[in-house]
Length: 171
Image 1 (cartoon, rainbow, N blue to C red):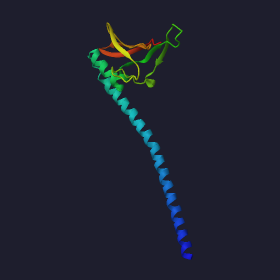
Image 2 (image 1 turned 30 degrees about the vertical axis):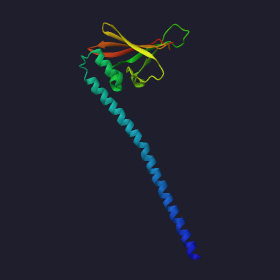
Image 3 (image 1 turned 60 degrees about the vertical axis):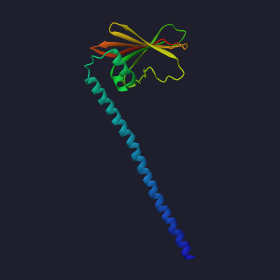
Image 4 (image 1 turned 180 degrees about the vertical axis):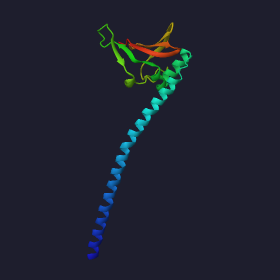
């Protein structure tokens, strides 16, 4: 009987000992896992700055609009580097109001716009077209029977193309 009690006490001590060590390991793991995402976020921000600097340094553009637009449509870092910030965005705030509202988007709050022709705009039928006016090109995204009409206005500056304005006349 004394052996059973001693064995039970021994097992309980072992359980308590290993349980405490496991809890300590979990705490260590959770504190290091909190630091890793913050570190990787800093690294990602630095990489974006480096890529933007690289793109800005290679400003010997001389590219055709078609070459520029193909890259602009699919490369988020290149897209952000080729927008004149603050970006002016005009739109109808209310369907009943005929006047356009204007917002300004800063570089820090800009979100990539997928302008590829095969862009996955689920359930939306649309056509794309371009119009040229000197050193300005307009890209039209026109919905088919759905009220979408968005114009992206690009201008050439020092032989480089830039997005300078978005006009959303959708209803």
